[in-house]
Length: 406
Image (cartoon, rainbow, N blue to C red; front, side, top):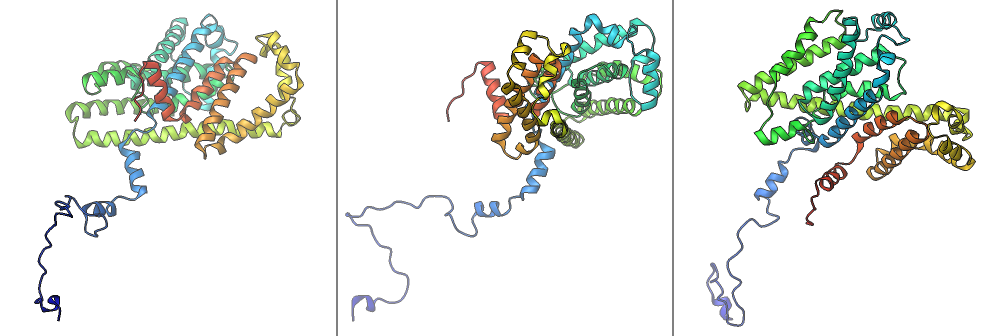
């Protein structure tokens, strides 16, 4: 029998390390991967499903903050620039010298239920006040100063002036009208605004009850009927009062958390509607062009380039219209871009390429056809699809900061 067989049953003695084989030292602390009872495996098993994480992000985070800020800045500046550009013609467009008289405008608004504060009082003084208030509100909205209040005034002035003269505009006015309504429901001042700067300096946002009280007086005491747009403004005014009261009494309590969650969900829904509106504009424009015979044979662009109304630079328009190949390529390229845009949203890289091409197309429309405000409006609306990484890169470049490589 060997010595091993003579050893009694029981635990074997621990082997001693030899000089030729050094000790490996104590076992490392922490769990060993693969054990069924490990904390990391239990946490992975207890992780919420993707739909629940998406629902939590939908209510607890403000997604698309930078895109909303760019849309806010773009639409505020475009509307302010348009009003300043047309300041010498303001009375002809929206005032007492307009071919579309006050009586015709009031009759149409009474029929379709549109809202405008211009019919509240007659006279030039009230019109001048509303027109110049529209310029101030657009600038303040673009800067993000008291954005909830300035956004509401921006909305009121946009719909008031555009409903006064419905035949004034180049197509971009309809987009401004719609997006102004949607922007009121977004949290578009979370970044790149004076409100965000003030909140970072003071540690939180502070309401301005005096401003909302000042805005509520004309809303409640103004004459005229109460169509649904006016009721919507009243709802916004009451919501601002509720927000201020809850923030003052319980800034860290559950009511404020509920209001934040509701604001986040409303913000996401409004951004989704803005994106759907942009897709609808391009889809309808593209498919209607497909049905046109001039777009099918590639000559549609030839005709506006020979109209005086659409030729701010006659020499440039004549140069573009003189090349049949250029006209053909631009005509077909416009149709292809507009029809393909909704489908490119499924591919991020292709979508970004098409956004750049659409921006170039709109810049071409602004220069060749003399429609700068329409083009800038569409570029601002397209910003809702811009990638966040590109916007953050632009922010760093503007601020002059260098990115430290990871």
